[in-house]
Length: 275
Image (cartoon, rainbow, N blue to C red):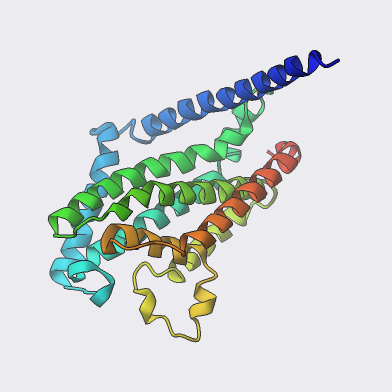
């Protein structure tokens, strides 16, 4: 009996490893297909994935920094509103896009769900990862613009990948959750758009956190994106320690991912009957 235990553990480990790899292959394939389909009919093709963030940067700079001359005081080095705005808007946009695309991922891929061997769990992940690629491109341009504007990046910038990872985990959990809810409630997709818009206005993206009334500040701090955008700005613009604000973000991200994945796996078979 004792000689069988190592073999059993090795067999279970091999199955787990194969299952893990079998999920990554269709995920990468679908993400690649997503980029090709998105830009298939455009003249510049996939170049738009670089041009759109660049054009957005130029637009925001022209409107807010040059024409309106908006400033945010001590929140940003040299008072650059464009850096302040984009450092908060890029992660929020990636999260919003990942959630919205995740909500329609099951209904838009009915043919794949009919295949028994296809891992349905990767479908909501496709939009999340595609949005993350756009975020990475935007952040790269933002960092280049920040350096050109005279912002001195500190070693705290090395924590930026951690913040991106937390944002991705949080988005994945919510995408798994809403993908199932959208199947059962057809109007949920419309309501989700309103919810994300409301989430935008209670997150300090277009306004500094220090402008929030003190009486409302504890309520605003219940929003995980309050802490996430603050952490992004801390490492990118202020060269300061993002802790302890990362901890509530990590807690919410873990809870969202575990809850979303559990709910997705529990309700997937029932959801297939409605698709």
